Image (cartoon, rainbow, N blue to C red):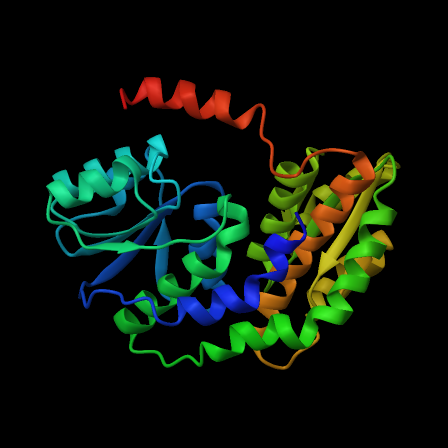
Length: 301
């Protein structure tokens, strides 16, 4: 399944041509789950003024002055469909990013703009086609200017180093549980954890620096089965890494967009390498579909 990540330069190039609607609002709320949550969260690294909400919190976060960006690659995510329904009831302007499904149907029925995307077989493999239109929307809403070519370049120029590092990281996860930490690149630490969970079917966790320096790091007094991995080179990252004697992943570029795409690429490749070591099929899911089915029943989808 490694080829799914090796296709990212091509996907980033294609995604530049995705058109997004011109919508204005006083504030932006992003809603999505799992691999569809991550594009909005990663955009936080670029300091876009965006809030995040799922079903329980979205009624308190939105009104008629809010633009809601709702992302579900499959178009069948119960929580996201329900969040869109709630946002529409509040009079919010909604934009949907999806490949189809019930979410597209709901959007069409309510004259909601749809950014229809096509990527690979799983949401986690399709990050480029979700992240790029999200950046386009947020750039338009905030007036920011971004060079989206740098996303592709981050993978192309970083590929050799990241492939080697991916193998080293996968090898180091041997009867230990990885815990990914970061400050500036915290959203990418979340994605490392998710990739290990979904592709390798293996436990992993994450923590945000500096908060963990005031609580979680104390658990390493008895945490001999944990492997701390720090992502980033901020001064606070170095403190956590030093205290925990952690494995540190350094961003290799001066440009943030290139670091985002190369680090996300690393997370994916590393998890595939780990899956190979575990002898599991990265693409096959056995437990998540059960949870999605029960969730759909809750929302009567």
